[in-house]
Image 1 (cartoon, rainbow, N blue to C red):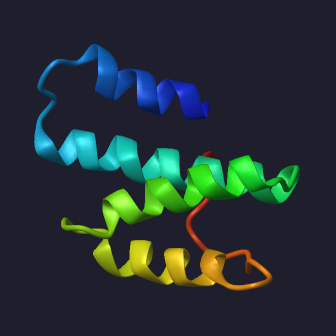
Image 2 (image 1 turned 90 degrees about the vertical axis):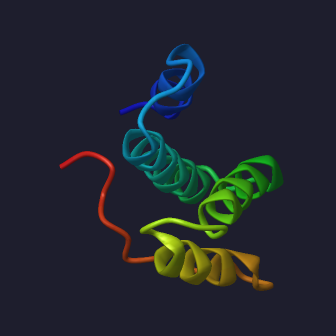
Length: 87
């Protein structure tokens, strides 16, 4: 799923069920992180961090979101072992 596809789902669906909205946010965070490691730049890093921070507020994926936020926040961001977005 493209990053814009996950973000678009949440924007197009006025009130998706919370579990689907959370799943879309999770896929978006993973995709943004992967995009950063494919072509690192500050904007991609900040987008990935913002996506993980949104997820770290509450829900089923809080632990993963906190781990990923911490790993990406260091002086040298560390690639995680998150589930792949596709595959």
